[in-house]
Length: 254
Image 1 (spheres, rainbow, N blue to C red):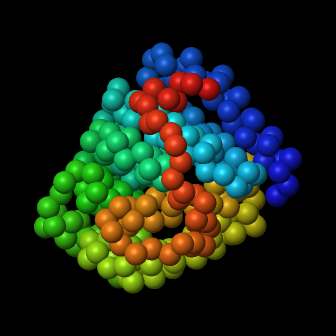
Image 2: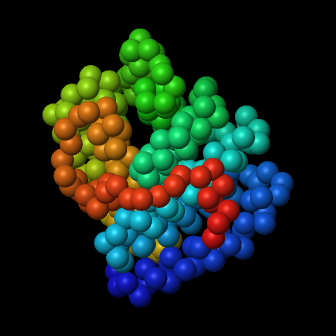
């Protein structure tokens, strides 16, 4: 993907958010609207990272995504909330904005939204929220893992292996589990690209760098596990420390 196209995608994403900003700061918007707003930040951040090889804008845009979502959660109805479908939670973690991720965790729904999200999606995110942000006991983590296994009914979900590794604080198991998860994630992206069911700006950015993988690596680092320098679609530059002040209202500054 040439930098020319990435520059266009980044510009379009930020311009669209600029147009959406008055709506975002007035009446509460629907779930689809806020996720589109946050996705634009993710597109812009990844696009900048791919073009420049620098993490500053990447971190800023993901931070903005997380804080915009946290602001939305404060006024969203319980019916609109779906914990298992919360990409901005991973944006906040990937940015190193753990306060933003904590806000999202505290404001998110604590029960599975039956009929509108998969229970395994809920359990994956809920485990991470409980384990890293809500001071859950080890027993709570084990209970969530037990339910996760029950829901899967013997089928494979590589995210569960990642959660188990984090629960056990095993560096070796985590690195193996994350590598497998990322390989499967890449296969899924390749299939989506082949089928043509995803917007080109998403494929060129969020399909080339796995923000969820960055977030998982950051969580492992935070708990003291030994992680790899690079993973598939999780380059080391995406985890570099940058100088940025995380502010609740940063998402309004476009």
